[in-house]
Length: 237
Length: 218
Image 1 (cartoon, chains in turn green, red):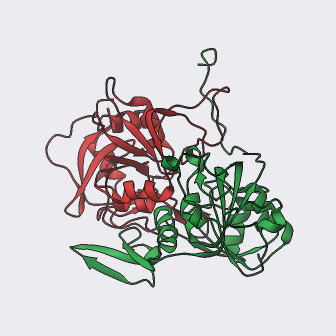
Image 2: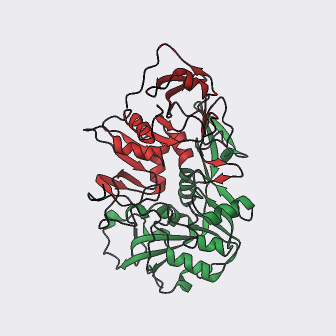
């Protein structure tokens, strides 16, 4: 690695310095747009006591579901438990602390964290248990909750393409939380489908500029589908 | 006759106008997409980062990178856009979505809604629901009027943890179309063949009934 070349060639290098008790953001919505190889590597490293920030926690046996199985997460910050049975069990038993956060507030907390804004007021969650213990304020006749922003020791991000300097392009709804997380990690590691030379991506269409990115690795992705829904064909309809 | 799930969706669809940006929640709200009136153009917003959601894909066009908020594989229509979750909730929180349709466990006459957890039993997480109810001016809640034991879910005060307080104005159930104002439910329409008395009997909240209540056209 030299100058602005951020490409690493092994997962060990990609997650160098990753230790127990760290705070880690993981991109993705359900299983869509998750950094599969980086998740696998954290699972292999066996780091524990993690605070994981991710919209979901994968499914049983895949994605962050693997960290749950190995009890690597002590605190989970996310918006949706969904159909992940182990997640629900760890939550209900109190074995893992879970801070359920409204999805838009979660996205904005991460965006704000990366943008140097320590907290913001939002109407979301006012009058609900999400606002318990938080400062509230009336602004022009409406009530708002003060939400602190979020940053992380590591942000594990999935993008479609990167150039060697870390400029990123995401694909379709695999974008989701990834761009904000890229800005909010002290060390942002991006796993991509394709790495191209600097200059090969049109600067007009960069989603995330390389300044936010420390390491890039080319991964191979299973891209498991959670809810495979197909339009009925004429014969079936 | 109480409305079917599809008939509830049909009645909701009558509230859609040409050129609307609409967010549909999971369950009955999703069905609304099937009944958008002929000749109207509507763009469906999916909060995971898609404006212009299309129908389900075929085996040939299925793409794991293109899903909706229910994690189902979908397609994108002509003129669609992809964006981040922060951008998506800027649209929602900023009041740019014209109509939001979502489900609920309970609603009450103060306009509060409970839809995301049943303590000790079910924790799904709130997902985007709290942002949606906080951000949207124009919300329709679709739900069943009572549970299978006949216990009303149209309440004076919600008993479950809230998704949002004082934010709901319109509710459509299998029995009735109601508006919440001045601390009470106002009966606007009843399902075909359902009497005002039947609705009253399954409504725990204060229910205002003024004049003849018309039947829904579904």
